[in-house]
Picture (cartoon, rainbow, N blue to C red):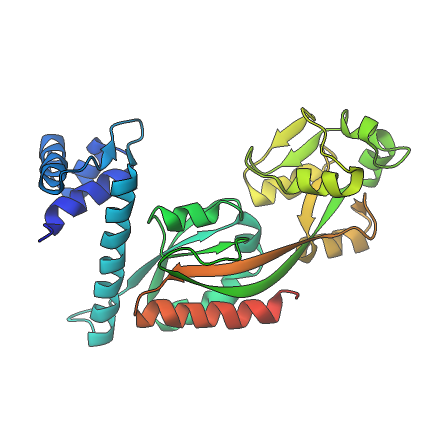
Length: 296
């Protein structure tokens, strides 16, 4: 029989990123938190936590934290359905989402459900090709991802398509790409990437040039709003979703470096395969509204 006091200590260390902060969140001493995790590992006969900075779960720990959070989700959903004993009962949903979706269509897709159902969201922002790792590791209940196939123990539905364009200001284009976008210019012109794990820019270059040159000069800007500002201010060129690029192109503030070569990204909604009314209701709202707003 699992002792959930011990599992809560384990989960808190992962969520808070350390023993000190976990102890404060649980109103325990650091020693008590450490002892609970050691006792949990002894009871299961497994190492659950890598004592690094920050601590991270072992594969066995990932399975346990996933189980714990699924149980939490079911308990919160049950409490929500039974009704609050006093005040408003909120259900928390941990969601993995890419920055472009968060900045464009996501809020509109879930707004009414979140408001009507007294749901609070715990959003983790990652590249759309990496959000599924958050789900796999048990850090989130559901995620928006480019992955088409369902992971074990999960369900998946198609959301729609975002189109991206490779854009720059007219002045930047004239200065860095006077002869058009070619490999020689790409090796010199500063690019805009969201993070070092962002491969969308390289994929576009492979589409246009047949390969993606290595060691291109790049700004790494992990903020959607600042990313756009960098491009509009002429500091680099980069991939912008069509929902944002259309008005900028119409106004002449940006130009398309690869006319007729927009890059489509298909998005999917993955979530745990558990019987939670809140999770299913959230999923239905998200899928329905996303399909209305996104192409494809």
